[in-house]
Length: 469
Length: 97
Image (cartoon, rainbow over the protein chains, first blue to last red):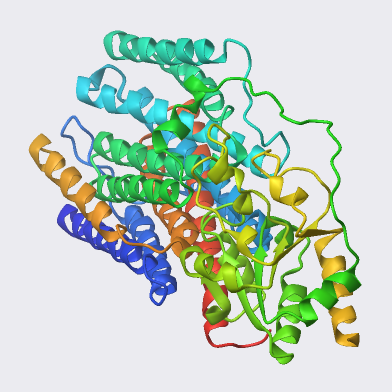
């Protein structure tokens, strides 16, 4: 295959990626967009087997097939065997951490590619190539180890609260300084050992960078690391002289940055504050811990009676709903209420679940009709006319502290104003605070009724109680 | 490749990237992130190229590891994004599973 044809097909793949991102931005075209992206990626992967990049010394390129052809095929097969079942079998509740993991391995791959090419070029590498290699290794490793930490946080294999230790910010600053110092060393001295030291330091920095991030901010960090990985791919494209990698990587880097900003806006978080939380975070006092305060708890029958006489009910689903796999039961309850002439809507917070839009995915899985899903701006003005707001497994997204308590970690985040409804019902497993780890005053409000227990079991009881009325 | 050509490609790609996602409802943030994530799995192409260049066992081993990781990123990413979006679609038709 001629190099012109190879480049043209690469360009076609690049265009596919643009169309993919464009398609993914609109509900109607999203699925097609993703398929176009997959087509472009497949095309790019196939074509690379039919063209051999000529060596840099100007000598003739070796003939096809590629060196190590069967090894390459074997490695792709291993990747398929691991990746496809993981993606097909994952529970939708665990999907955010899978995306984080996929992003991390992508960053790791970019770093490895840069390291191999560096070993391969040896002293022939130009200064510009070494600088791009250093960039790829640093950012790729940060993305890899950082994504692993976000995975552990989301999977709740480690605490979801910010991890802050005394002098933490000095350790982070020192690590960052070391990363920069060793980067300069690599560029100046061109050795394998400095590059490996750089890789290790970058991995450590990635861990330190993500540890102080609180659970609620994790999606923003995943999105940011995603953009980072995109940029490393673009940098590898420079070193490998591949226009396709430059286009694809830059696209992801740019769109990922915008997406990160959009997410931060939806959560009412300052991007700067999230990113540099590592440098500013201080150990927090756990306010009101151990304090016992009276709450009003009710039985499923109480809830059913309240619902039976309501004219308008708003359901506020949270991650707890998904964990209990109660999406179908909640739909059953909603259908039952509608059949009794009650006006029912779901109030969806933009970041309900673990990622923006996650709850929409989860409810779509349970076939909840689109027109019952109301976005926050739409549903907030209606709480004044709402008789009952049922909060199922959500906490932070309805916590009035976001409006009333400056300095609390979620202050400034837009919330669903369920406190304006005549009655509020919380379905909770326990009095444990939400993902962000903040106490919710609304739980102690006199108009609030708590129904403790597993969301699915509680809802099933409410449904049968309501049927009996 | 000429430096100026690369800078041009880079700058244009940045603007295209900004433009295509500037207005996205929060409903689609997660699938969009996941889809973009799959796209950078195209580093697989780079991993295959360096596997072809590899002269030592160390280089080959590292590049094969890169191929495995990149394949997981790319294929897994597209599959999981499709699964998310499939649910939205099934929903629109109101079909009951």
